[in-house]
Image (tube, rainbow, N blue to C red; front, side, top):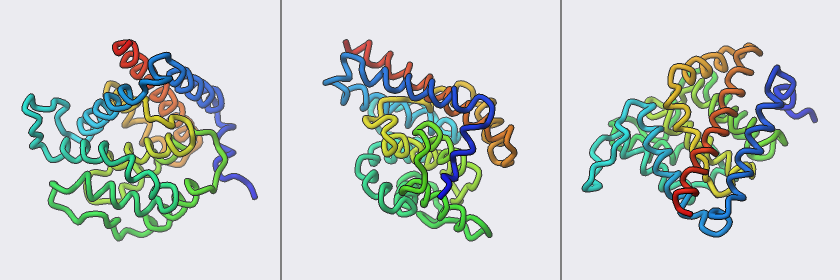
Length: 240
């Protein structure tokens, strides 16, 4: 059976971008701090990722000094970040249930129907296809799977709210599940926030389904993974 993601590796620039992203994430896992003290890097990465993801969905990036987060978007992003370890086993066997759980956490304060995808033609079918991919339907390299999960969920906008926070959290789960970033040390969300206009444009390109647009998104996503590894490197260096 043909791997449905295999043709994407033949798009211009994709194979090189995937290899560079994979190498960058591997190197940060070999940082001397992360060989034993990786939990410290992972904890800081989780918070930075949540703050950046919230900002991409219109929330603030600053957590109040008293720790009392009242903004619903940031609060949701932090809840999602804290839950990834618990949700991960569900992602491996029933990713649609995992997405529903992520949405319940992300949108709990947004006054919307929680955990239920929109009843729009095509959404359920494409979610099923995505679920099939992440449960063994592809042997594509991790960076490519991460890009497709992130891009497809952003293109589908399956929920009424909090789609960005959910999509970026799902991409982190995919990064863990594929073995690309098993300890979740990277922070690609910060790159996406710093290059918001490029991020939005690349996602739009993916949503068109045109080869050029899909390649643009995948290479952008891989660049974000590389930048996220550099962010993790900085966290580890500070802890050394």
